[in-house]
Amino acid sequence: MLNFAWAVLAGFTLGVPAVPFGLSISLAPPIALLAVLLGAAGCLLSAVFTVGWLRTLWQVWRSKRRPITAGASPGKRRNRLDGPTGRRARRVVNQYGVIGFGIIGPALFGTWGSAMLGTALGLPRWQLLGWLMAGVTLWCTVMLLASEALIDALGLR
Image 1: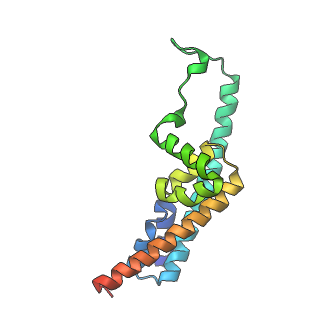
Image 2: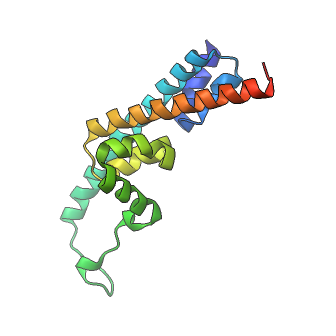
Image 3: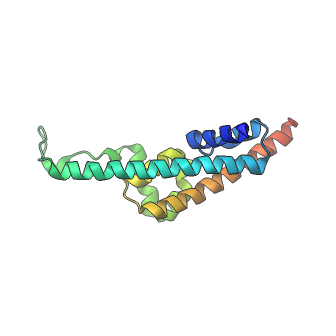
């Protein structure tokens, strides 16, 4: 039972890469997958709702604040999502939509990163959660199969 709790905690903190950890602490593959998925679901819920709340606070604060910029016009402000990660996330969302972002996001940005980026980009919260969970499930299953194949190939059982 304690190993299951450790795997859930690893799934919460690491996301998809926690699957080999679950296997390494002697959990059966389906149990390790379940534990990591439970942890990842907690990660997604906490990240999406916390970032959504912070985003709302930020928008309220920005709407009340007088636009003062030193040496630049108000329309020339730099957006925080204009960095390389934000541009990549916008490209994925523009090309594939919420479904593609949810499936590809955990592989490109990690569990925490994709949840925070999707929320910061203003994607619909419940659609984002559903598709991110589908993506995390897909990538955890791929990681489980790859880990099992590697363990069998190296003869570690």
